[in-house]
Length: 346
Image (cartoon, rainbow, N blue to C red; front, top):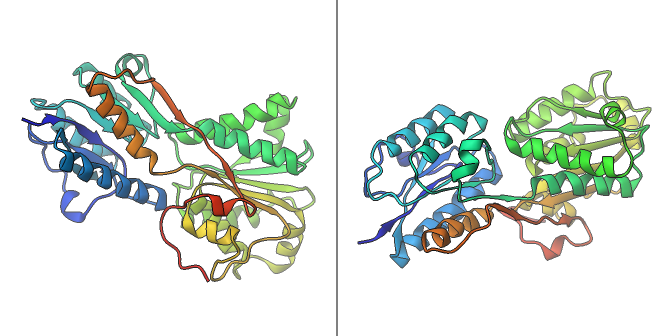
C-alpha cells in the first residue's frame, strides 16, 4: 500500500479541479488558490510536476486541488480534516493570513505539515509545523535597500514601496528593507519620513499600474526629490514600466519624474522582466537613466517544500526555518539566471 502525502498549495489548477470537492481518505490533497499572477501560476506548474513525480515513483501518492478564494481553501482543508485516514502529511501555501485558524486545526489534528512561502506563525502552529520553507523574503528587502544605498539613496530622498498583499511575505520584505537602513544608521523616524507604502497591489500588474499612475498624478509624487521605487514583485514592476512607456502619464511631469527616478526594483524571476534586462523586450527598452534590477524568488522552491515533507516522513530531521537564499539580477548577470514563464524575446 502507498503511504499518503498531502500537499496543500496556493495557485491554480484545471477548472475541473476547482470545485471544492471533498477529499477522500485515500487521496493526497494539493489545495491551491487561483493563479492570480505569474508567480503563483509558475508555483502551480512546478507543484504539478512534483506531484506527478511522486505518483510515478510510487512511494507516496499525491493529488492537486484548487481553491478559488480564502473561504474555498479553508473549506477544502476542513473537508480534508474531516477524514484523515491514510493521510500522512500536508504541504500548504496559505492563501493569506486568514488561514491561521485553519493551520491551527491541522496542528491540533496531529497531521505533519510544511508551510511554503506565505508562512503563518503562532504558538500552536510553530509547535507542530515540520518546516517553514520559503525564499528569503527579508533578504529581498535587505538586498533592495543595500542596492539603493550603493546607488546613492539618502535621507533627503523618497522611496515609494509597492507592496504585495496582507500576508507575511510583504511584512518580511518591508522588514528587511528597514533592517538594512537601520544598520546604516537610519532611525525609525528617518525611515518613516522617506519610505511611503502603496495600498495592496494583490501582486497584480494591472492593480500595480493603477496605483502607480494614481500616485504619480498626486502631490505625493514629489519630483523635486530623488525617487526610488521598491516593488514586491516583477509583475508590479512591469506595470510601472508599461506605464512609463505608455501615454497615460502627463508628459511634462513624466519628464521631471524620469530625471528624478533613480531605481526600480522587483522580485521573483519573470521571463518578461529578464527580457527587459537583456534589452530584448518587444516594446520596452532597457532603461539607461535609472537602475533596474530584480531579486530572485524562484517558484520552483515549492519542490523543495514537498521534498522536505517527504524527507520528514522518511525519518530525516528537517530544519524548521528553511530559508532559501536570494540573488540580485541585473543587466550584467541576467544571463546567469533561469527565469520562469515564457516571453518571446526580440
